Amino acid sequence: MPQENRCPADGRALVPVRWTEPSAVAEVVARCRAAQPAWAALPLATRQKRITLLGRRIVERRLEAMDVLGDELGRHPTDSLMSELVIAGNYAKGAAALAGDALRDEHVRLSPIEFPGKRAVIQRVPRGVVGVIAPWNYPLLQFFKPLFPALLAGNTVVIKPSEHTPRSGIWLHGLLQEVLGPDVVGIVQGDGAVGQALVDQVDAVVFTGSVATGRKVATQAAGRLIPSSIELGGNDAAIVLADCDVDRTAAGLAFWSFHNAGQDCSSVERIYVERGVADAFVDRLVQVTAALAVHPDGDGEVPPLQNPAQLAIVEDHVADAIAKGAILRTGGQRCGEGYGYRPTVLDGCAPGMKVIEEETFGPVVAIVRVDDAAAAVEAANASVYGLNGSVWTRDLARGEALARQLEVGVAYVNNHSFTGAIPQLPWTGVKHTGTGVAGSRHAYATFTRPRTLIVDKGRQPDVFWFPANADLARLGHAVAELGLGRVSRVATLLPLLARRGAQILGLGR
Image 1 (cartoon, rainbow, N blue to C red):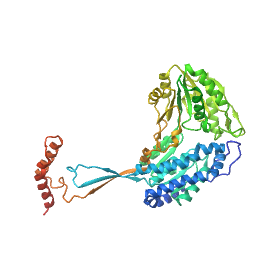
Image 2 (tube, rainbow, N blue to C red):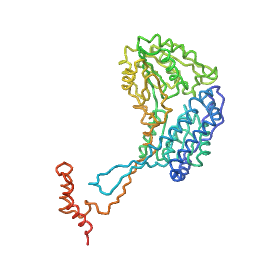
Image 3 (cartoon, helix red, strand yellow):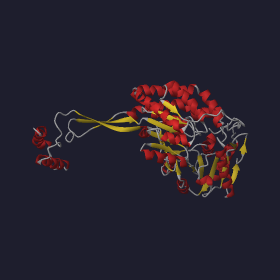
Image 4 (cartoon, rainbow, N blue to C red):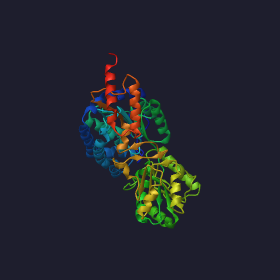
């Protein structure tokens, strides 16, 4: 039986969605596998047009998606519009434009002496059927990022939405069928058992979610010898230097801490601020944070938590920090009829608190006051996670130098996190954040494999073919000396090469 889903904003029950039986997953994958050769046979230009059209259709029908996302995430419609839907069109166009370079044949020049008459091409071959397992925090955007390049590469895809947000997946799948036709993209619904069954059937897998589940997916994929792209948690740090623009920095970090209620693997959860500016910065951040409304109480800059389990984690982390000496500056309490929680600023935080050591994944930011930038970088890098990191300063050269020291996949100066919406840039991390790469040509390693094609137009046999005789040994030594620069003229080898050709063609006569 599927689990009950409720709207996070008001607690009303949503219409249940039927789950896929794990035993039925193989049939869905088989249909997509049967459709894959025809999809891959389409010219790349045709696939590019289809994906661009898909992005356009998503934007055109954004009002439908805003309603679905409102039900499943409790978001204000404008929040969903800006977080996921506006991005779709440009992301699709950008991904389509990028595919030409990412998938182009690579011609390799071979030595005419060692490999006469031969040419080599490295092709990018689609894997086959790609499984994409997405989380609930951005239930459309987290599909766009792997789905577009996987399809552009000539794969078919099976998507598995989170069991917390199945309706978003249904909406997207319906649109995919309209634009791409049947079985180019399939869908399965359910919990971890369905995801496990999917990994057992596909040729590559993209997973975004928790560290614990990501380890299982990576292990399962490795056991089947299929590639996996695994993007896991984050505990992003921002470093605020004494020379920062306090107003702009507070506005930016409030956004990147509380956007989507902090339910973002790249949300800023830790802020390391130099003592010289700490009082002014924290005061301003508290002012900005206290003015934010939680949907549906007001304009709704901040949605509620998506589910009661996540709300419980947030409450536990805040209580732990306060018990260990943190100062609650604003927020720290539930609100509304659903799973709302007021944006929270905790000052005076320190190592050992859950808000520092673990991923909160909620509207909570922890302030740590440090003596200098070196201490801030050291503390930021002490995390087991490494997705995004940022430095906020007026001195751009110093900021860039410090950002280069951060152990993260994406580093920023005076901003944070937004590059996840840019298909030309790799979105990746280190440590417990996982091995996944979304965006850029680097992502195609998951969706394609390299295949070498050799064409030999030479009419003569290769000189190393049988028979193995004294002339072959002489030729081997001559080539070795040539490689060492001890033979200056290739012409000296011509008589030996001619004799070898005659020996090879005459063998067995």
